Image (cartoon, rainbow, N blue to C red):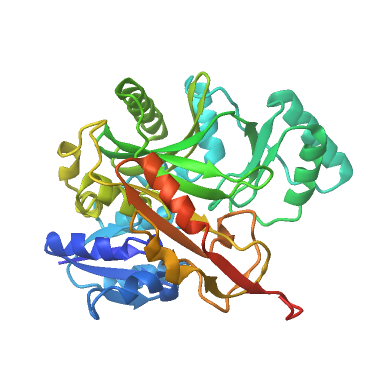
Amino acid sequence: MTIAALEALTFGLGRLVEAADAAGHRLCLLTGDRDVYRHELAHLAPGALDIVDVDTDDAGACAAALSAVPDLSGLINSTDTWSVPGADLAAKFGLPGPDPSAVRLLRDKSRVRALLHERGLSGSRAVAVPAPTSSATATAAAAEILREVGLPAVLKDSAGTSSRNVWPVRDERQLHAALGEAAQRPFNGRLFAERFFSGPVYSAETLGWQGETKLLGVLSRQMSPEPSVREEAAAFPVAFPLPELVRIEEWAGRVLAAAGHDSGFAHVEFVLTADGPELVEINRRIGGALVGEALCRALGTNVYEALVDTALGRRPALLDAVSTGAAPERATAFVLVYPDRPGTLTGWTGLDGLAAFPGSPEWYPTAVPGRRVEHLSDQRGCTGIVLAEAETAELALHRALSAAGSIRPTVVGDDARG
């Protein structure tokens, strides 16, 4: 029997292969760019999985590829970009999977915000912002945002990923500047505005089955100073008092139920305001970067087995193995490493010294020398990630920051002078 994956997150493919094997299935990856998985593939034995090279943006081509997969029993789609086509394909082939209409809702951040506001689960409305085509339309858009949302506010792409096309604005000057920039950008969805919520950012990592939601832990998220909105570091699991964890678990369950996500993993980003949690966005998957690895180490098990269980239409055993607030087996933290300027990546200095740092730091490259690095204000500029361990997330973060501080990406500018 075979389980297919319609693309995957950059890291975790090896864990997914092991999980499929444990379930007695072979994993088949459909991908339009196997180079995305170069780090994972380099650590897998040859032939550990089947890879089908196909244009994964072409639904017809993906359907044809899936038709050729022998004994297809499940389809995993663990990314935001391919979540809607993945749900459609699962339905087409009669495989277990989410309701495609619910997946479409979750891919539209403005619809989710509006729905939660209607149900009393968010203090902000979502205001659609027509693309400014002139100074007059930009002025009108700014006036509506000021009237309906107020300041501070956030402008964002309703279907954005990796913190692209996100503008926090605190005054009218920033608002008009953001609208001007937005008019020059392509969008995956459409531009909308919502209230800016003040407080630290976290994500609730959850697993659900038929409406039951279990909190696997809370991930801290260190963000860059404004106006950039890139992620800098994260640690798992945050040592909240048990009553606070229960409160977050109950809140996440209500939010996911309202948004129609009743089974599988969810990565629920939120701001912990003075008045309680406020949603940033919902991703119906394991968190990106090294969140999956952090979950595996903290819980002492391969959590990707739950991903396989869900794809096969059965209740994940992990739901019964996790106790809210239990001490982690190993806490972890990871730091994203960015260059200090755009240019062509030539390598890194400091990698050979990682072993001298505490916490068994590990290096996970996200770019290869020769790649042009341009977008330093969001995660596209990340060149690699340092992961470190400790007894607590706080100590792990200290270790990861220390180790990552010794690594410097080297880039050469277009003028060849660096």
